[in-house]
Image (cartoon, rainbow, N blue to C red; front, side):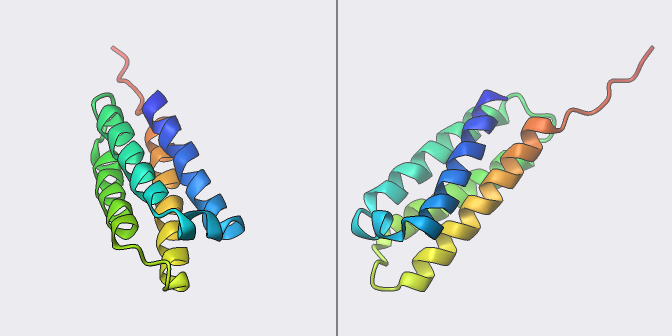
Length: 109
């Protein structure tokens, strides 16, 4: 549960950086690689305790995609950088929040 909450905060941080501080990741693409690594590790840890692990599996794939965007150094394509960070951050935050809050009802005996 705590790992999912970390992914919510990382996703919100990605959205914040893409909208309000785009020069931060444009000048330092290694930050995207580091954020992708953190999201991947948190999703891997969160996957162990989830009722349905597909949310964190999706977040792991998105973390690899974010790391690839950071490794490609696409700072000369600002729209690609913006939309990749914004969409990945949004989806990671929503799926991690869903995985954090979703707890199915246990059958009462």
